[in-house]
Image 1 (spheres, helix red, strand yellow):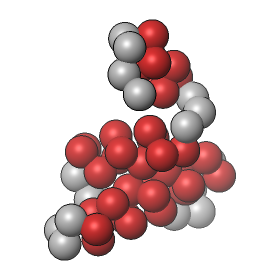
Image 2: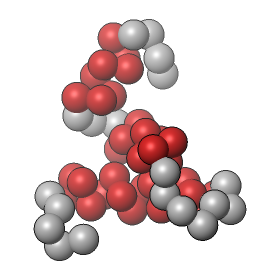
Image 3: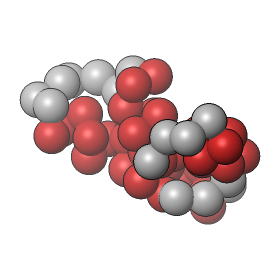
Image 4: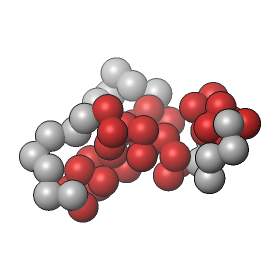
Length: 54
């Protein structure tokens, strides 16, 4: 994971936690999206907020 930016590493760690929470043995796009949302910053979160999603 050293090839990723610190923020990307945070998202991946959060995504892994979400996958664990759902007892999944993989990290999929759904977990990455949850990781982005949990991080609470960045373009993805801004787009979702502008769409009215919390």
